[in-house]
Amino acid sequence: MINKEIGIPYYLQLASLIEEKINSRLWSEGEKIPSEIEMSRMCHLNRHTVRQAVDYLCVRGALLKVKGRGTFVAKSTVDFLEYKLSPENRFTDNVRQAGKRPDNRMLFCEQTPAPGHASRALMMAPGEPVFHFRILRKVDGKPFLLSDNYSPVKLLPDLDQQLSSAASLFEVYHKHYQMQPRRRKSTFKAGFPREDEARLLQINPGTPVLRVDNTLVASGLLLQYTQACYRGDLAVLSIEWEEDYPPAPG
Image 1 (cartoon, rainbow, N blue to C red):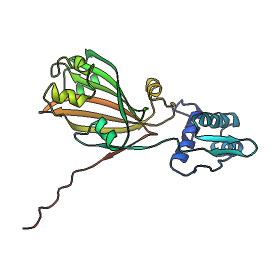
Image 2 (cartoon, helix red, strand yellow):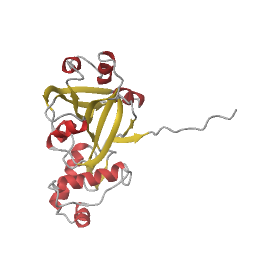
Image 3 (cartoon, rainbow, N blue to C red):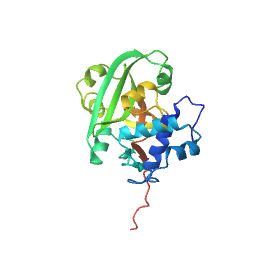
């Protein structure tokens, strides 16, 4: 349904609803979708707004207009990746195991006083210095997640220099600091992207995102706090719980 209270343009909300139907296979490839008049009645929107949404999805390659016949589903707009969360999972390994190509781009790394949410998560005094670094991670060349990360300077001196030449964050922790980080806590929340997130992830403002906050611990020390924003149209997150099996008889 169109939400008229959240400030997102109606045509973008409608485009997201249509994409959901395509990606969930409710509307299959080659199927003719309802006409602009039918959709305007169904969604209580004017035809101009419906036409904007349809044209937007035609540009994305999700829909195809055929003169004199109507508009058809061209293809699914996504190739979902099941991204497995575990105490020690690493993005690069995770993506490669799925048969896809990972790519990491460090957008910036700077030393700054810890903001309130980071100091609370890391149990630091407000304003203590942290390294704040932002990473854009891609899968097969397509933006997949954006993360803001905070690490205490006192635990990880010269982290900014190490990250400038490293391909893997976990490799830096392991080789340079002799640490083996583990995920201590994760929280999940669905929402919509901020303007900068939508731009970097190359999605429209009406595309849902999944926000995951993580804290990493090593040797009993809180090492990193991460706020990750996953594209809701690409990511399926899964958690594999360890199961205790009874010992074999005898």
